[in-house]
Length: 92
Image (cartoon, rainbow, N blue to C red; front, side, top):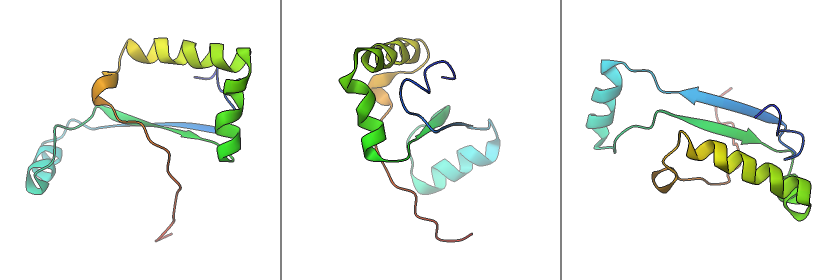
């Protein structure tokens, strides 16, 4: 990701790895939740425009293809939703 962040306008990249703890399974079951993910990745942009801008250039499209090829090595993309959101701080 470090090598692609500039070409894709990524301001911040965070990985959140799920911990393999018995409490996680109990928490999942108490909510009737689905199988847990191994983790999530957060890609931060300064604006929606910064998110979309790289894909109008060949360099940006090439970086996007390279990222997708890498993701396919360790992510089951058909079972891994992607979405765009906005952070709303409720308690700080």
